[in-house]
Amino acid sequence: MKLIKHQRVSASISDVDANLSVIGVFQVVQDAVTETLGRLKMDNPTMRKQYNAVWLFTRNRAKLFNSIPWGDEQFTVTAFVSSITHATLSVDVSIKNADGVLCAYSRVETCALDLTAMRILRLQTIDAIHAVTVEKPEIDMAFTKFDCSPTEQVDTVRVASTNIDMSRHTNNVEYIRFILNTYTVKELHDKPIREMEIRYLSQSYENDVLTVYKQSCGDDKDVFLLKSSDKDTVKCEILF
Image (spheres, one colour):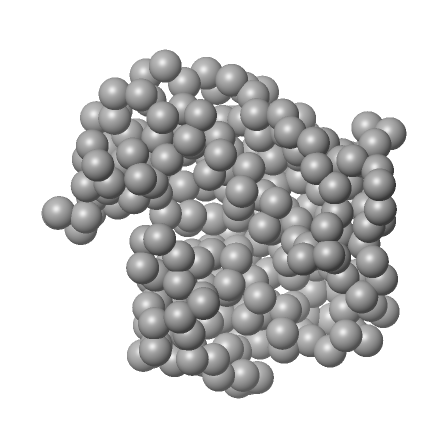
């Protein structure tokens, strides 16, 4: 099953140049992934009710190819399950402009956390998983094993109430917001981001203090590490 939906670049997902923003891409991707799981009858409210479990994003890699302007033209979002293992389910999301040109592509890896045992749920125990069709990816893209050990502290962030989602932890897109906020408007304008990969290593909660570390690897790559109470929480690699 493929989710196909059409939408426009609204003010809430626009950048300073009135194009679909980087954070907007990740918001569109998050919505597409969760809607896909909902159509498969495996959204978080259903998972809580039937299995006392929730989906966690574990990795997300996104490539940004072309901008989409704020205006009347619709863009098309397509989402589908691209792989299933005993512990993970991946959803690919493509974003194409009105001419059908690929503007962004993301792969999100998820796992289901058993809230009773506080361990990863075997996906084969979910009844709906057996009806899922795995589709062929639109582009060749895999998660990488980037090294990330930056030591320069560039920010500290206290997790606030609006950063928390229905799972009562920091929402995955909020970490991306914390990272992007370490750049100035000029930096993001002058050096457009062409790729981001994020690893979600552990959860954080309201009032937790996240320390943001950064390392620049030449002109075309930055790596980030977010820690909470000396525990690695998120690793990220950005390519320009």
